[in-house]
Structures are given as structure tokens and as C-alpha cells.
Image (cartoon, rainbow, N blue to C red):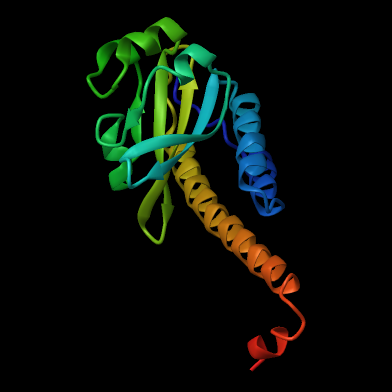
Length: 188
């Protein structure tokens, strides 16, 4: 496949709208994976969140991959295309010709021909990974890589926003369940 642009303004607008109009992270991520697979005509998409304690990538949402593949084992942050977590996009044009994969045989068995692994950043720090899987060799254009990097930053902002909204909702719910004689203590 030649390196031609696949992400146009219409696709970018739909994807950005899906991010901006959701206050539920898992629903937003699920919609986003579906949108990207359809719009880019690729095999699959997964959004990972970085678990710093376990040093693993945890699936936030995925679409297009088999259960066997998604359950193949833990994705260790430093072994699963680790340079993505340093903020660098990694494009694996052909999975048969790389040493960057933690589970190369499983990728081939799954029918993955190529991958694009892009950091999800918040304030310049990696907090996750956006991974796109193509069923054949994929020569992704520089413009599309730049668009996907911007998308990764938007996902990072959405992750922070939804966590903040959820925390505020939790505080609000706690405040509404306090006995009425304690409420004046929190209004000072």
C-alpha cells in the first residue's frame, strides 16, 4: 500500500467530536476505536492506558482483534514497542521484519501485517498508547502520522478531563449524602 493520506478533515472532525462530546472514558475510547478502524479501513485499533505501578499497558478499548490475541499475555511497557512511551511514534511497516514486538508470532497468527504505535501524551508525558493494526503492509503518510499524534494528545486531554469529571461527581455525591448539620462546615 502506498503512502497516501487517509485522514482528511471530515475524519478528523468526526473523531474529535467523539472525543469532545463524551464524559465517559471507556465509551469514548470504544467509539474512537470503531471510528478509526472504519475510517482508515484497517484491521483493528486499540487504546492502551499506561499502568505505572505494574509497568504494563492495559487495554482501555479495542476493536477488530480476536480475544485470543488480546489475552496473549501482559504487555510490558518497555518490551511492547517501548519507544512509543518515550513520546515517539513507531511505524512497523511489516511485522515479519521487526524485532520491536513482544509477541511477534501471535501478531502474525492474528493476521496483522503492520502496526502504527503512537503515544498518548499529557503535558508531554506518555500516559498511554494508540495502536493501529493493518492486515497488510502499510506505508502510512507523514501527514497521517502527524494527525494521529495530535489525536493522541487529544485522547490524553480527554483521559484527564473524564477522570477529573468523575472525581468531581464523586465529591458532589459524597457532599449530598452528608448529614445536614455537617454541610455548613464545608461552605467556609
